[in-house]
Length: 240
View 1 (tube, helix red, strand yellow):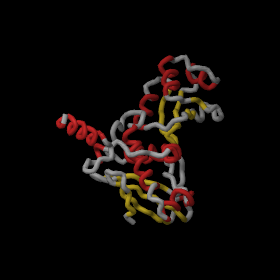
View 2 (cartoon, rainbow, N blue to C red):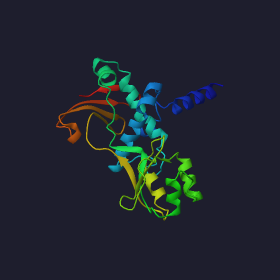
View 3 (cartoon, helix red, strand yellow):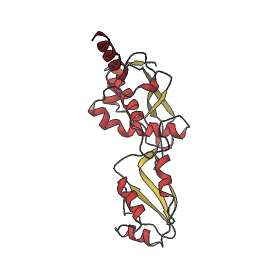
View 4 (cartoon, rainbow, N blue to C red):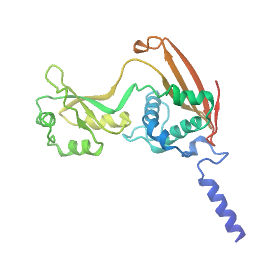
């Protein structure tokens, strides 16, 4: 019984996601408050997507759905900074309400279409396209056509929108295999503003919260940044 008890204890310690001495690669997540999960989910996905575009190694970076463990690592890092409850972090979350600047709108795909194809004509008129595979794609990822800006011969583009944010590196290619779609890309924004960025070292997750100032619609002329490091036990420290 003694040996069995020790084995049970070792297994329990092994599966704990916040065990001291693990490396970042083995961390799933520490507890995440509902507020952080709800208010920063899209921020986490935005930060991961920007890292993917930079060539940073992110698990399942070629899949349309973000790897949930990767998302949770970002969210739990944000949670750890939020839980510090220092004057600075309270200002970041409650006064300045800093979020990741949404360069990409990962719930929206802009597609270039063949306006004369029956599939696109059906879609514009509010009907299923008639292409079963494409209609299944839209249904699976909850994409719908807005309808406010119908495509025409001079501007053959239309927007598709979802209630969920996706990894567009994996999502966009799914739209490009249909003959009535001639191009596709993630929707995006212009300008600049407050921001959160995320990166990792071997055993730490690093978040930079920043406030941009100056003519931010044209590109912020300056920026004040506060950096936090979160270790494998979800303990956050302000670095600068």
